[in-house]
Image (tube, rainbow, N blue to C red; front, side, top):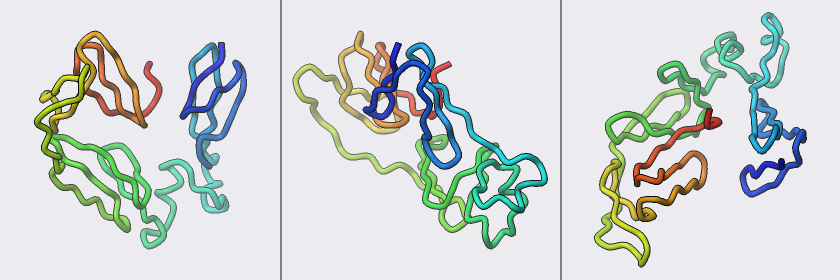
Length: 152
């Protein structure tokens, strides 16, 4: 069948560019995305530096990327880390700080206060699964997960 991806519907078999480095295809109601990489040795010539193999060939002053664990983040990108910290890539340097939580004392009708994550949030009552933004998942048992990629 067709796929829903970032509020757009794609027919089965349709391909589309997620960004300059990622091509996605709708396959039987599932969106599968692959990063495109320059072949080894082509990185110096390629204008579009897509994979971390290419990033390593760039001079440090041109990189403006951050390596965190085994992932590469571009300048301005933010991500959640361990122990309720949020990190950002700022001009090639990783900066992390404790997540700032908004005070939540009550929730609208039909939602419950979930204190299991870093910050208290209002979630659906257990038994309802919600997916919002990219990459937020509230499972049927009220737990919250944040990760990017396909659910495989």
